Structures are given as C-alpha cells and as structure tokens.
Length: 181
Length: 316
Image 1: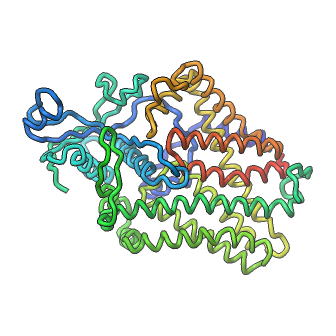
Image 2 (image 1 turned 135 degrees about the horizontal axis):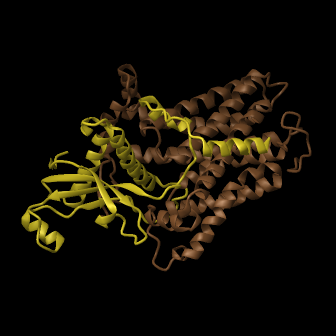
Image 3 (image 1 turned 180 degrees about the vertical axis):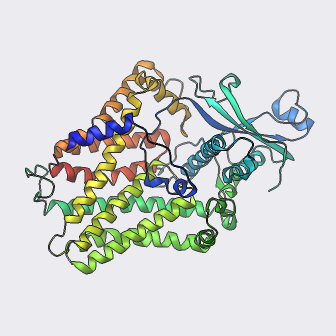
C-alpha cells in the first residue's frame, strides 16, 4: 500500500493536469494544496515606488543631482528582525509575508490579463496601489505625487535584492498618481 | 499503556483501543495550540484595519525604512469585496467582515478551538451526544477557517493555511464517520479515517516538496538554498554565514531533500515515524528561524500524532 501511494505521488510529479481558474476557486484554493515550496529559482515580482518631492528635496535626499524632483525608485520588500516570542506570536512578520504574497498575486493577475485590458479593474491592482501609496508616504512624507512599478527581478547571488537593473524586467509602470489617501 | 510496536494485521483490524484516544487527544491539543496562535495573530492584525485603525498602528517593516507606522488600508474590505463574484454573497460578506462580524468570528474561533480537546476526550467516553457536539464544533471550525481564508484572498500564510485546513478536514472526517457509525460500538472508527487522511496530506507535503527540489539543478548544487535564505524576511545571511559556503549549502540542501523524499518510509515502523517527526520538528523550527514562518511549525506539528498512529497501525 505504501508503495502504491509512493507511485501515485511520483505520477503527480510527472503528469500535470489543466489549471482550473475561477473567482471561487481562487478564494478556496486552500482545498487543493500543491505542497511545492520554494522550488524554483528565477525572476520574482518586486514592488518599487518613487515620489515627487520637489527639485530641492529630491537632490538633498539622493545626495546627488535630482531628476526633475523625483526620488530614486525604492524597493518595498518585507524585512524584519527576529523578536522574542515570535514562535508563539508573529503577527507583524506574517502580515509582511502576506504583503509580498499580494504583490505575487498582482503579478499573476497581470499575466492572466487579456491583451488590451485595463489593469486598474483588478482587485489586486487596487490593493497594491494602496500599499504603494502608503509606502511612498512612509518613505517621503512630503511627496505630492508618486509612481509605482512592478519589476520581475532575477534572484542573484550578490544579495543586491533587485537593485541590479540588468537583472530585472519592468512589467508595469503606473502613470503619475496623486499622493492622496 | 499502549506501545508503539503494535504487531497487528491491517488498519481496520488493528487493536488500537488505548492508542487511538491518546493520539486523538495529542492531535486535538496540538491543533488547538496552532489554532489559538493563529487567532491571536488575526486579532492583532484586525485591530490595524482602517475602521479600527485609531486604536493602535503597526510597524510595516518596509525594507530600508524603519519605525514606520501606518494603517493597513490595503487590506480594507472595501477593496477586497470585489473578489466576491455574486452580489448576494457580497452583501453577506460585508456583514461577516465588518468590525462586528470579525470580532464575532474571533471569539467563536477562540471558544470552539478551546472546546475541541474536551469534546474529543468526551467523544471516546460519552457516546452519541458528545459525538454530535464534536461534529458540530469541527464543522464550525471548518466554516470559520474558510471565512478567514476568503478574508485574506484565499490564504493568509500559504502552506500553513493549507495544512490547517487539511487537519480540519481530517477532524471533520473523523467526527462525521464516528457520528454515522454508532459511536457506542465503534468509538474510534472515524479516527482511523481521519488519521489516515491527515497523515496522507502531511507525508505528501514532505515528499512532494523534496521531490520537486530534487528535480532542480539549483537545489542539487545548493545555490537555491542560499538565494532563498538571502531573500527571506530575516535575510540576507550575514557575510560570514556557513550557508554562504557552496559546499556546506550543497550538503544542507541534499540532507533535507533526501529526508523529505524518504518521509513515506515513516509509515513502515512507528519508531521510524517518531524519528522522522522529531527531525521534522527541528526542520520546521529552522524554517521559522530563517523565514519567520512560525505558523508552519505549529500547523505541521499538529499532524505528527496522525503520522505516528498510522505507522503504529502497521499500515502496509
């Protein structure tokens, strides 16, 4: 029986069925776990934001000549130091991980979007837009306008975490948006 | 006192009269612990949502920016409600995910979670009434988990949500079969089915996770391990960390890939199952340590009694 079970598991690795999609299937996907964790290395979606803070402030913040008042692009990525008792209560880290999952889902939604469709109709766009707005204001409270980008970044061994432009591909850049909640 | 070396014929004929309640209680207690930890985290997070945000802000931990405080308005239900395709269901969801609705859900989660071990205990001793109560409570837990998953667009924490749901389904099978099979005569028949389902899911999770890595060259040469650790929420690894050395990273990768792939062997002997589960506990603790995934630790720990029970039943 154990052997038959093992053979069945091996078959699931070799043969792949069609991917079923639908709004309820997405919401109830926990019923169909695939148990494939951290298996593939490749390009992963990263969210970048930048703000318009005025020519003087942008130059001061970047320590160099400003680009017409815009700050440099800033990565929004979950990082958090270990805390005591995290094994029993770790809400903040789990929330940060959910935030990155949201960015991943946004990427998946963009891939599935039909040609010519407006990304702004996506729920994930609305949520990432709000995340980007909060992040922009957190980085630059004085920002009056903003943009965000979704880049596919190749995991690289130099730990630059996406700061190497040669290894990234921009999937979406928003037009200039207001910094208003 | 039951032993782990039960030399019995097969799953249905095994004499596990003392061992089954013991493992059922162990599973119920570990699951309740996992469930309450999740519930407490949800309670803290929901206090940060916009309609309640005045109470207490939370640090976002954005990369390169520290000590930031802001409301979590990207998780606002007013944005997410468009995920619900049916207008009628959307109206129901509006009520369920209102501040009052969420508060009720959290209290129900805490109450029914705490009741679970007691009801499991009673179900072995008090027949039909307690079997009915257990079935209804597990059904409620299942419904509450589904509501919480929908609130987080299908999953809050990925794999741990999946495994929590699988354990709940196993408990539901156990409670349902017990209820239907005259609990006074066959008090543990349902548990056999429930344990088998949970063990199957847990062992599959290890085996599939290991197998897909075995097929990838970047895992076989150890590079993927270093890359994922650098990108983890606790990352990057310090410059002199031993996992930055290619040889040691390769050794580490192979060690846990082979262990994961070998996990189905745990079903052959109860002692092996115990050993595999002990190593698994260390493995999940390391995953927590490096990736911050505390929920994985508890969600998988709750499956260990089912694995040990199935191995003890000499399921071959």
